[in-house]
Length: 221
Image (cartoon, rainbow, N blue to C red):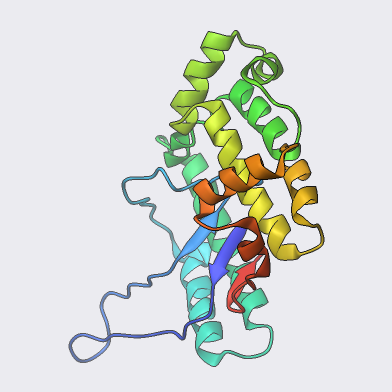
């Protein structure tokens, strides 16, 4: 999923005179796998790839700036679609490189851990345990714990709780289910236990979050 915040106008800054020699475009996006944490959250350095004219990357980025500046009907959908092309182009180029930065996606480079994590994403309300997840991965408990920690930087049950709380936040804002139903949907039989976990994750009660409207400028595709 690509998440864009398009609520603010485009701001520009020009240094010097004449035609610019360097153009820098700054923006923000999040890319997630299912209901997981941000795929790029653990990156500590820049992603650097060089592109040629036939990659059309410059044209796509100029199209994004034009859409954001004009703010015409359908601007968010158009911008999200073009930025997805930019991201896919970057991923495609990286996969062709000798040393790919995609190797930093430890989860994607460990199919057994990815299999267990996919179960967590697809069924966040299921009664997952270290034992059941290690069986899904085809690993011993100790090997599963070690490799999951290496891939995600945290134990599996902590990652599961964060995933459940993110899913719960979305269900609450959708307002299609009451709080008890949301608690069950994310694996909690007790409303009080769910509320306590939600407070720890989001800093407010589920009822308050449910009553909060999603910002009008946020676009999710």
